[in-house]
Image 1 (tube, rainbow, N blue to C red):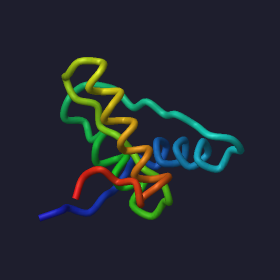
Image 2 (image 1 turned 120 degrees about the vertical axis):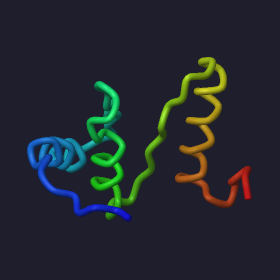
Image 3 (image 1 turned 135 degrees about the horizontal axis):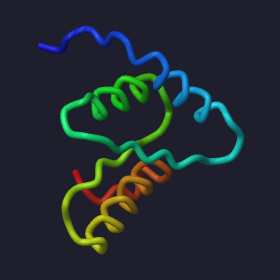
Image 4 (image 1 turned 180 degrees about the horizontal axis):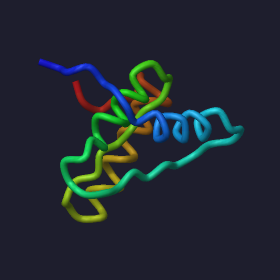
Length: 83
């Protein structure tokens, strides 16, 4: 069961401000475990035309390849490599 998303207006406002600026933006979200980072970014992006990538504890080579795949899926969906 997904609970209602409340609070975090300051963070949502900051993300919205960055989203509305011209040119591209890379926003890196980090912090302690279990404070709602994933929920915040999921909530923010739910009605946006974009993509986000969750980094994992793997080698930099694997990280770069997975990020590249996510960007390709978003910018060129016909080239998608996975089903």
